[in-house]
Image 1: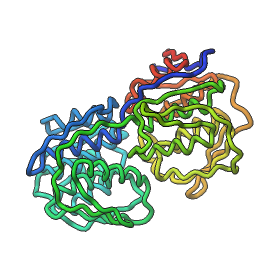
Image 2: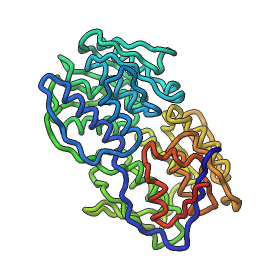
Image 3: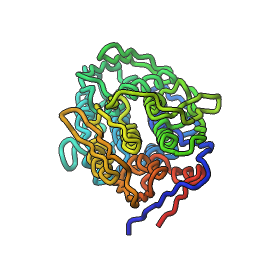
Image 4: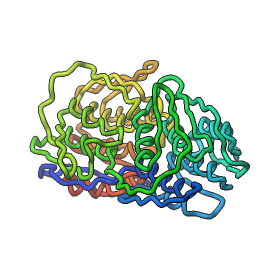
Length: 418
């Protein structure tokens, strides 16, 4: 029987201090860099602290230490992509597999790029998809790489992190529009922290052969996780609501920091302190309708912002949702199905998506399906501030924010698993 969590806002105002999980995106990149530093010719140690407790990151940590031939990434897309490059450049013989959904998520663009560098990689079921068998055929060499800029930035980051270990480095030309650019820049900035110089001019990224240098790094709290608290403040009916999110930096490397600006449209004020950021409600300024947002650089925020707009009756005109269709689930389809339950239509027109909120929210209880997607659960949870809400499969949040339901309870929402 499917578990379900019922959420209800209590009488007391939502005011709390939240210890956010650390960034999964930073953690996964830093762990690969740490492992590469140990495998390079002049091996060196990198000390990381505050590593994410997210299941994806814990899976990556475990697999980096395993000696066996078969590595199961479960449903961790970043882990699959980063390990593919790491295993190829370190000349290991491994089979990479994952869940049924993981085996339906494309990886061909990355594999073909690695093959151009001399990697020997075999598709074990369907061309372009996991599972993969990687053979230690020969040391990777330099080759000119052209890769689409509008695909997952994880493919690009996977190539960039191994570039310093190649005898002649690497040049990557990004073709067309560059989506998720902040994630590419995060990768390069983390590499720079560990001694790697690079250039990113126009559509070309160039990295010369170098060695990662020993250094310490404390992983920042997760801005994607912060977005759900912004949504709670936006939807909370108590005007005195005040939430402090610890461990966030104003000069963050994470692209999802843009939630600070996006949520101004929905009445959330951000004040940075030495401790983190304080969220408070403020009057919403008059704005154009529809509100136009391009999520190409921050796709993980799309579900959160869309749900808030639906609840507040704000029409959206959105772009940059293409990559959502190949995430943990088809997130566009999942949003369309679940938003209907709150009287909202999400319409796709060519390369744009239009959100048409209903006149009022339902007065009857609503149950949200999560489609095995952690972000569906957390993006819809703030609706508990304004309606009677239940969410199926609550354990799905363990992928990125295992303490999410506990933190909600501390903030004044009753959480009851049935």
